[in-house]
Length: 258
Ligand code: CO8
Picture 1 (cartoon, protein in one colour):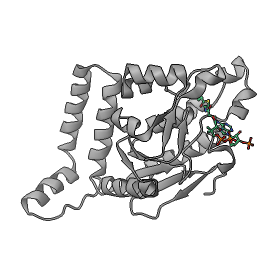
Picture 2 (picture 1 turned 45 degrees about the vertical axis):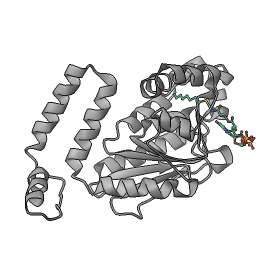
Picture 3 (picture 1 turned 120 degrees about the horizontal axis):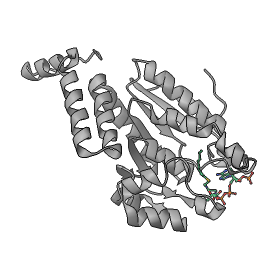
């Protein structure tokens, strides 16, 4: 399958890489790009050979936000009928781990795409920001809700109200990213992590992601209930028997996704 705004590659076993490819617009997220990312993730969800996906903008820039030129053409009714929220939801619904590899700017929708990732590796020159306020708007793809839950009120307020960017070290301290590496290592490190996760039992990985994300949305009792149900369900999988048997027999487990 060929795409107009992204490239896909599966060079590492179990890992699919999506590279945003609109260099002329700093990888601005137009509707086509969002829909192509969502299409690829939906296919990857059904493909048992894929255990994790890396998403990157390449070595220079992650994404400079929604495509402002495309947005400028929409009035209130146009925004209301916009397809983009649908594609963001499709991206959020991806059930396997999504690992972001971020170099350069991750602004506006780009920073929101970072927050749709489960783990983010940032190059030490990466910059994160929600500059929508400078355009007379506010974040529209979860940037007010997910940012405050992720980095806390003081930093989220500062970023959204002032439009000021934060650097990779600040993003690390604020838990927006999991690791900071030299920019030349960003994509490689994301691949290492994705390959490691892809080698784990897929049903356990999927249920772990679902349970962890639930903590963003629900009260403790409901979250603990979901965890208990997922834990019980895993007791019925062949991979759980294999994992425990391999431990006892001091050998490497062979997981089958069953
Ligand atoms: N949209 C469209 N084009 C862009 C964008 C963008 N977000 N960002 C950069 N470009 C284009 C520029 O127009 C320029 O194109 P051209 O050469 O044809 O004029 C080219 O990329 C290079 O940009 P600059 O010349 O500005 O390069 P600089 O190195 O000087 O600056 C910056 C780089 C800092 C990234 C700067 O371009 C910038 O500030 N960009 C805009 C960042 C921004 O405001 N992002 C937020 C957008 S709004 C948003 O994301 C809301 C999300 C809501 C989602 C709602 C879903 C329903």
